[in-house]
Image 1 (spheres, rainbow, N blue to C red):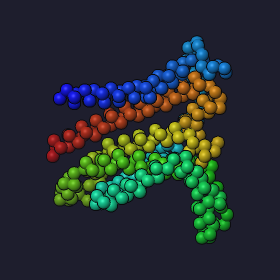
Image 2 (tube, rainbow, N blue to C red):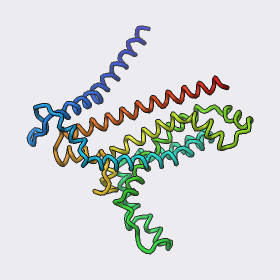
Image 3 (cartoon, rainbow, N blue to C red):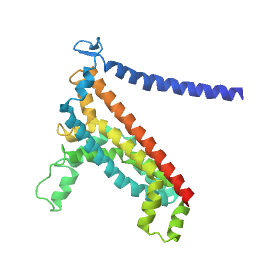
Image 4 (cartoon, helix red, strand yellow):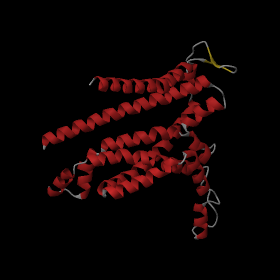
Length: 289
């Protein structure tokens, strides 16, 4: 018993130490740097100032923020539109087929995402596979400009983030009791009514979790916008990267990073509130039944 307790303490201690060293400490360093003053020689020096946060609210960056919201929002909606029916079909398949399809979905993650983005760049180029097929089939006369557009950025984001939408949805569908759907069918509910009143509310936690897991990273994947969108499509991650690596303005880049962290925390808070509302509503419906 004593060995079991000691082992548990060691595991918890190592986990907390890892999180503290590689998660908490870097975040504290970013927050501290965000209130320093910019210096060309030392990157960040005293005295403390909040001008960096005022600069974040500059209208110049409002357009970048809105563009990031639009691109991330469209990416999230496409992932949800594709991932929801796919997760539903997976939940209805046998264990072997489900494992095979999930394996095929996860296999691309064995390759570095940067290499996969370069592969997409080759597919969408004027001499890429898509344009070659369209021109060869006679659908278009000349190659289309697919690369360095918002379409290319959204395509790349969806390709990378789609599995992160499917997996939370799969967890929700696994918890869905088939007896409830059968009960709705027995009571005369049509397919649309069963989906709207039973399936969708019970899988809403997975929908919200999947949307957050897709939406937040989509705003920071600067390399996707750099390689597929060029200078035309900017995400918040591009602004942060440029401040650190190009402008060498570490305090302002840190302030923008803190802004993104706060946004992430706000969305997570909304997720927990929405999840509590769904669970509370489900409990009330069960009482009514």
